[in-house]
Length: 229
Image (tube, rainbow, N blue to C red; front, side, top):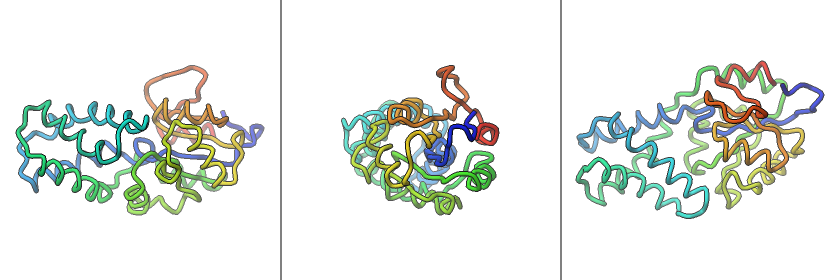
């Protein structure tokens, strides 16, 4: 419970998988692209292969072992290879570009997101820290109607390193004019959001249904944040 005794003044949210329902929006994006490109694969079959591959490449990207362009291409290439679906490199590149272009057009938020942000903005300064690509994260925030809640929006591309690197959190704290001990990070990734924030001296709340550590505050729904903040 983060009560007034802790002096919390600033809340930093992750965006994808925390406020913005990435999985739902991503599925709708692929459905549109596959229809347009006449890709004959059942979307659920594709996603079953794609999701773990995408997570793998995002991990490599966080660790600076691949570039953004490699992430975008290789996650698709490996998925199609896994499904034994014959497709040209040119078409993969087109799908990669269309995905980035179309994704911000689908803007489902997790249940309770608007309600919780309205509640929290009356008590705290709200900010975003995201590893997502700069060119689409602001579009997601604006098109989903939550941009106005956040005073600072920090993308890892602005900093030059990615969560969980402490430099991302230090940069965000500086931009927000916040002290680490007065700040809470809320996110779905235990490694990138929770451990990253804690290693930077901040508090953290893990947004997940899967329990990771007893000593870490955790919520399974966004509305639960009203009970602990």
